[in-house]
Amino acid sequence: MSGQSDVLHLTDLTSSQVNEAVRGRTVVWPVGAIEQHGPHLPLSVDLLLAQAFADEIARELDAFTLPAQAIGARSLPQSGGGPHFPGTVHIAGDTLIRFLRETLSSLVGLPLRRLIVVNGHYENEPFIFEALEQVREQGLLDSTEVFAFSWWSLVRDSFTDAEITRFPGWHAEHAGVTETSLMLRLRPDLVTDERPDHDQPPRAGVYLHPVDAEKTTTRGILSTTSGSSAALGEKLLRHVVDEATALVREGEGLLLPSMQPDHQRTTLERQSTAQPGGQYL
Image (cartoon, rainbow, N blue to C red; front, side, top):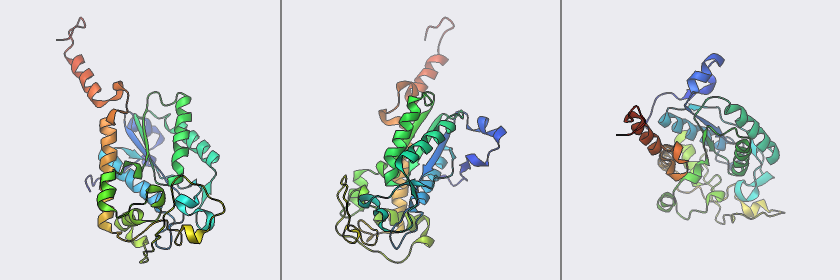
């Protein structure tokens, strides 16, 4: 990986240092969860992956990171195995929105230029976006760029087509080949030797009750772990970090013209060539 320098931690700053340190800078906040991930992965997968992606993105952008948020939305049967497996710690969706909204409101009170939120838990995503919308409606994001995404949302179809056989969709990749590979790359000490598969991944966007957990999962796994490797984890990690940094640096048409790097450069060039009367050479 590029950028081997230590990550800049916002929490290492003192109160008297923080305003000047983050002024005009980027802050990255990982948001994860404590959730079951089958018999081969720890409860901390969503937390560790969000933090790892945030750290790598922060290194590339010379940004500060916040500690990862550990408690997320409830696990659902069609995307995380649901409440049938012990270990998941969650809060209700409306509570999570309120927590995120109040945290974001206080965070953007610092003079940072850009906030990046990296989500590692499938069920968190709509609540993160809703909290950001509520903060935006309060007018608290008027001077701040915000990029919020789940890490898998940045994985291109060309990557999954080339690297993953019979890709089931991200909702069903819970504890599957991608998360297992990433954990083999990042924390192999926490991965057991078991590699269970589930040959009937659930359909996306379907809520079922009651659910037979023995049919919808294989011991909490929704797809396959076969083919997992640290090498695939490294490829995936690099791919997501490259996509994230390109999204931030280039904007990809998502930012207002006044915020786009090309516009900023053009404005500076025009200012540097302006004559005293306001005419441009």
